[in-house]
Image (cartoon, rainbow, N blue to C red; front, side):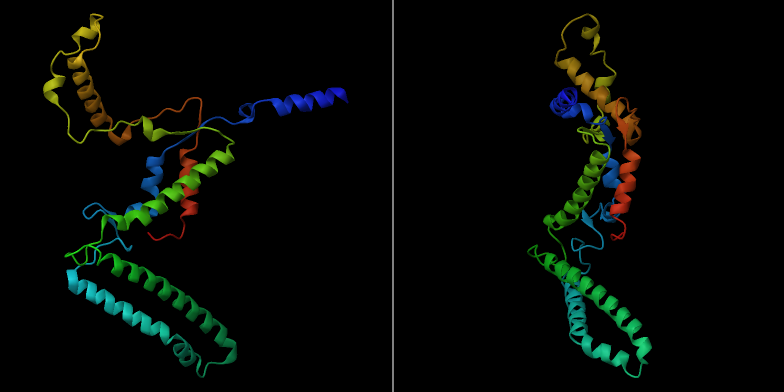
Length: 250
């Protein structure tokens, strides 16, 4: 009995890390790219298509047309009880349930669309002197939705694998500087001091930065990551994201 008691005490005192699983490897870059909302992002306008952040074409006339459509939907919803009565008129009792169910689904879709249209009309009038143009802040809800889904997926894989450490593979991918490669530095022998055992000077550091950008441009997004000492859950995370976002607007 004493031995069992001591064993329980030892187990309780052991660090929790001894029972944790291996670190897991995810790729948030792939998760963001795979999100349904990301496929709606318009790089020309910096907005998400088919969301309230999207520009309204046509300027003021486009906004006016959107407002007219909102008023039309509002009127339909106000008349919805009467519309339902008209649809049920002369319909046999056994068939009424199906008609009512279809009507309620139609009404919910119209209510959902109306809410989105009202938000879009509101956003389209926030930029002074530019009707139809939405502010930069209009994309915050979509960005927050993407990040909420990504965080939820990471939390799920962390709990599923009982891991205390999540490593993001995209941190190891090369990033190309938008200023471009500086070939005039690469062709110079500015790294000779390193081979002579001298400390790195500003010339070597400039050459090294240019070389780093060169290889980043060569590898691009296809740089290979070879997981070692971790559980690779990149594909699993993508499947979890697909399950979580199923049904979201694409």
